[in-house]
Length: 145
Image (tube, rainbow, N blue to C red; front, top):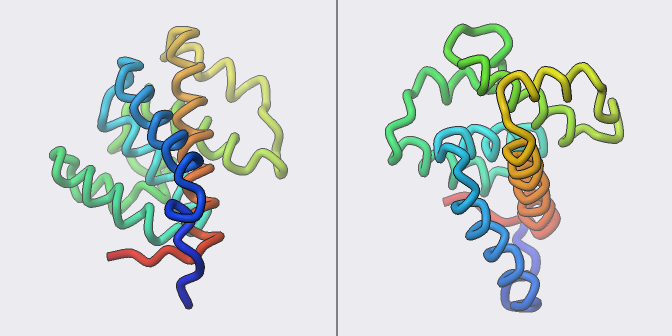
């Protein structure tokens, strides 16, 4: 794929706003490993090679097990993920594919079994943020590596 424009240089204020969202996410109290799983799963769905490479490497550096990274795209078929992670991953898939399925009440209620209301908001922010990053990455053909 041919690289397109460098969006961060063309719109530095937009890039700074995105970076500020990332900084806000570090202060939410959500676990770093959970946030990386969220970022990876949304990036898999969206086909963002740049973000997949970045967040898989970040997860590995933070000690994430390779088996979990390799099976993230089929997380429902494994026992590697906790109930909290599974609820978050279902919410990632729901919100990333919003046009296809909306936000079913059952998915939301399952989330509330594992997350406090503020955590649900922060998790939703994390999902919205990585989906925005993915749109920049895919839209502007950012290359991994």
